[in-house]
Amino acid sequence: MSAMRKLTTLVWKDLLAEFRTKELVSSMLMFALIVVVIFAFTFETGSSATKEAAPGLLWVAFTFASVLGLHRSMLHEVERGSLHGLLLAPLDRGLLFLAKAFGNIVFISIIEIPTFLLAVVFFNLDLSTGWDKIAVIFLLGTIGFASVGTLFSAIAVNTRTREIMLPILLFPVQIPVILSAVNATAAALAGRTWEDLSGWLRILAGFDLVFILVCYVTFEYVLEE
Amino acid sequence: MSLATREATSSVAIEVENLVKSFGTFYALRGISLRVHAGECLTIFGPNGAGKTTFLRILSAISRPSSGDVRILGLTLKEKSLAIQRQLGVIGHQTFLYDDLTAAENLLFYARLYDVPNPRARLEQLLSEVGLARRANDRVRAFSRGMQQRLAIARAMLHDPGILFLDEPYTGLDQHAAMMLTNWLQKLRSERRTILLVTHDLSQGLAMADRVAVFLQGRIIWEESAAHIAPEHFQQTYFDLIAKGNS
Image 1 (spheres, each protein chain N blue to C red):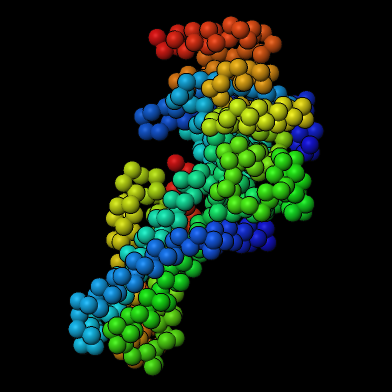
Image 2 (cartoon, rainbow over the protein chains, first blue to last red):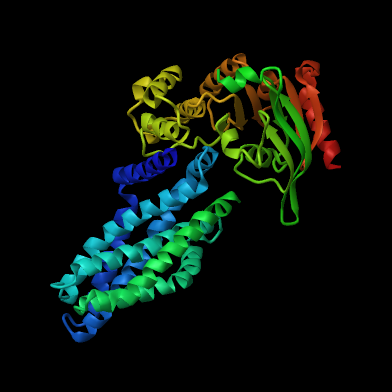
């Protein structure tokens, strides 16, 4: 019970600070929207090539925008020395990971919605049969991306070339998530059934489970030095 | 005063045996052994890179030693790090506060992490004690360095720790803020809390100390009771020790 209350407290702190400044979400959102707009002007609106490329373009926008947020989120803790304060508190380091990852999932999810809606308009996507599937895919993809991203941002933030280091570390590990999310999104937008998507969703869910567990256990060692 | 403080007033609060910390081939600590009695104030001096902060990080359970044993209030650090952290308060040159939260929100946040009972009443009491009650709902971003350090003291005292680690607490403070901090530290001393102070300020550090230790290159090169040190000669003694140790 105490652990749950501490987890809630840690998440509350991140959400409240972001609600006040809107620093992370605004920069991530601007970046993601710009990516969609640039691609929209690059391709012919409503063409079949645009529709085929749309899932990939969306996840490119999410991925790069998320890296910005993941990096800033951890940098805030380190720059102001508050991470040190958290480490001094009598709490399991795994809770710190869960709280940070949860905050990042919320922030990334917030930017995904308007970015997706903009893509629907610009790429002329048909969503008549796929809202629920898209929501599940985005959630599973975001959990996978944010959990590993939270761990790697904690590693990268202590390096000299931290801005570059995070994507270099993160993207290779994220290949299964990005591939599965792109393919599942494409299938959902094409009006396929849950059964057709189940293979990709299983990969995403499996990745999420495994990496949340791995990150929870290893976060302590990453934070130490 | 916490139960741990009262119970331990006549015992050893901190016991360190042959503590070693290495980063690859670099040794930050090379076999530190010392004892701090309950209610005692030990001031640690030493040049940059002497291992003082690494030593405090290990004692605070945020860094693991390569070898050696640490016991705090009778608890082994390796096995009971969370229990030990509940008894520690740390004040550093960084405040560990969140700029975008108010003073009250910062204290409430840490109070919940430390399972402080009745946290709102406790934070109101502490804000009043450090003279920030009127600024409770202002964001920390708007505070001066001195006010932030007072809030940091309140943060460190939230859970009424029996042991305090002070790591360069005077860094960046103006004279007025430094004087207020000194008054606060004197008050904490008078409550017989065990204090480990790391500082470069020889006069402030000596004035606070019951005992003094000098670190150099990861070792304790000198240890003496403050009662046996003449303040007017201490600076020269210190410089001689460092010069001798480096030669």
